[in-house]
Length: 178
Image (cartoon, rainbow, N blue to C red; front, side, top):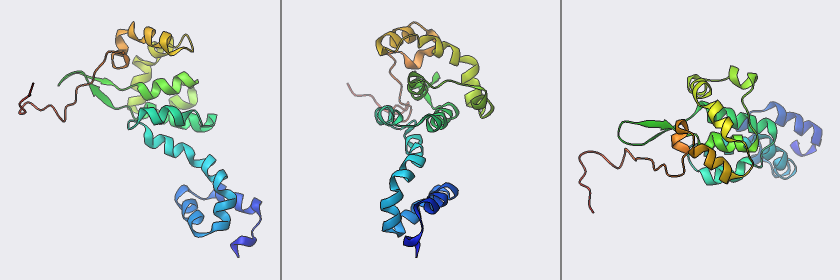
């Protein structure tokens, strides 16, 4: 019976179902899967990219370029609200702004709509680091951007020579071997 629905009616279902329900629907029926899987992928692909935030920067760089502007905005907001800490030593931590930088290189900027959706972390980043990072994006060439970042002390975690300290593997009880 579901095979008899028109393409427009199936699209209406996709627009009103959530991700989990649609995923189950695609698994149940081959007709829907073959006819609407591309539309489904375009609508929810940004969720895959969001899962890459703070996990795999190289794949994130590749996949973020495939997103449409509205989905890119959602990913950018997620990176701003979910900034992880990287450590210089046992006590001194910095924001890991690499994912934010990648979004900004593509063209994402903070506007009033995004500002209203900030949590504490996003608000703190915007207040203290956003303008410095924006000032570093004077060119489209990564070499020039990196040189600008290296000349900005506040963006220490983005410096080319920054090596993060791994707190989990370097406890004070471990004996270091040379």
